[in-house]
Figure 1 (cartoon, rainbow, N blue to C red):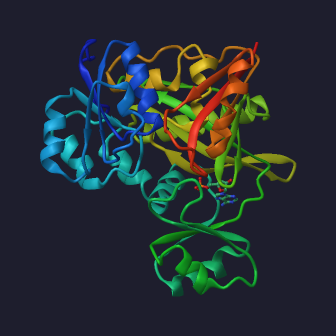
Figure 2 (cartoon, rainbow, N blue to C red):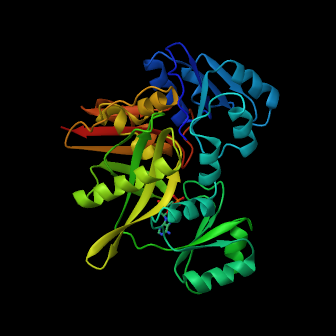
Length: 363
Ligand code: AMP
């Protein structure tokens, strides 16, 4: 059942768990709607701290600090999906938490997530759960080569993943991912990767942005372009998949569904790779390229407000991440007419770190 809650009035405080760039951009959107924001993060150098008046820096299992934080907020959301289950339960017992703790339980575990997706009759890459090195050999016999071994939990940006081809040593692959519960996935020879960023309000209404085409470099998102180069029928199917998932999760907030577009004979099929229960990097283009951003939509949903109409502005929009040293090119980007530069204030540019992004809207 959808939990309907009384819309929060401006000046109410929204608590955000996590203090990275997603928390920062959520906080900025919340402020535009007149809300106050309290960021709770376990990292001292959280870039979201810089844009809010209220912040707490403490571990996610410091119950006293969490209780103090919860005393100051009216509703809580999060910017990353690896919130410990005990923390989510502690929060949900005291304040409205959107998306719910159940959503986290499903999406934190790749095996649970794939089972859930398949239960909706939505396709994924073939997979087999792997809990021991013996199970890994059995999984290979079932899935075949090439394949990707991924830790079931806590993986992101290609971390905790290893690609395996014929002749590769299974034992060393198993050790390389830390001998943790995992999933073996068949390697998809995809034509392209797309994602659908969709918002679902507390009233159950869904509004999806156009499917986005994503290009990864070294496992990290490099560019997102809308519209994706797919047929209108496939775009509709992608949105239908995301809508079905959001409804089945009884979701409140913004959700991203990453999919592979693969050839199936003369046709194309969509395989769900991953669900991100939060605002997503492939939705950053909406700040400059849509009538309402993914961040505004998320805050509206969490606050119990109706969603805004959210349409793409212009013929196409391209978002490029600034990873590591790429941020050093900010002066050139600042001079480029029409380039919307977003820098996250993260200080030193470390390799592989998302430092900012730039969006170009083609009218
Ligand atoms: P993930 O952490 O699951 O989002 O994977 C990161 C990236 O690795 C994806 O965006 C793909 O580019 C690639 N990848 C992941 N799983 C597969 C797969 N089963 N087949 C082919 N490429 C994959």
